[in-house]
Length: 306
Ligand SMILES: [Zn+2]
Image 1 (cartoon, rainbow, N blue to C red):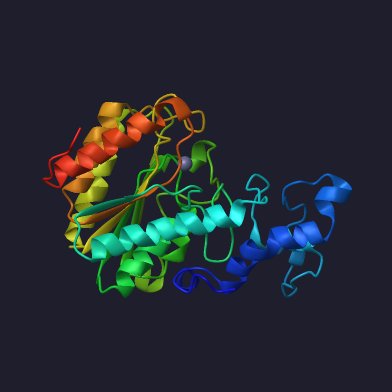
Image 2 (image 1 turned 120 degrees about the vertical axis):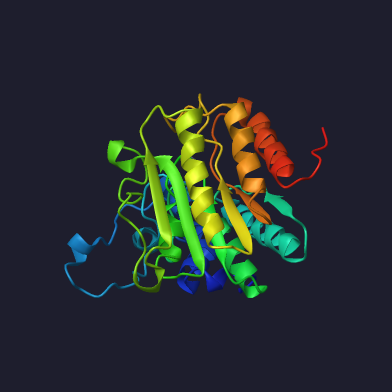
């Protein structure tokens, strides 16, 4: 099955195949019916410390193989997962195609989100990296330079690592400091600046827990200035709404007004593809998205319809 050759330019084919077939294999192994395990959750992980230099094998047992591709225990796969995962990637590609064909802004309401998914592994409630897939799609459509700005409350370790060695896709992120105890814990530090050809094309601005509009918008302004200096053809925004005050998954304190201002800054950068990432306070998500998108339309010089 290869419905997404464009996805496979970003992700290892083995990861895509795993996501496409793991639920079928899990059911075939009798794990839901026989053992009450109604979601794919790995229980063994081939960490460098475990392998100690041995080559990585792909285990034949599906319950052993799950940890080859998933790096945590909170990113579940169930009966409808693959359809949703494909739908999110399709939405991101449609938004990228829309902007590539001349529209100034497009928003993809992706669920599940994507920015924690690396080239070969999923985790952090993310499976395929929708923003990276959009960025690669824009490159394939002729964009020379892409800037990705990630305003989700958490560092987009997947996006960072997918483009870490490249200069054609710059990645900048503001997020709660992983060193203060927040996901993804192992990445998102200021000194991670890129590698090889990508050196200087990765920028992390970790923020202290409790940071509100002033500090958050100042950091976003700094990222926008850096992005603008690259003269990107298109910007891709990882639009997380979980930096909002009251979100249960982050300690940042951004208001609706803050998200509107963020939208204005983003919209003023030029053509932009906005990709939905996190956001977990269901009662406020809609209003936050509207604030950000209205700001983006304003910043792009479009009249936002009410
Ligand atoms: Zn997040």
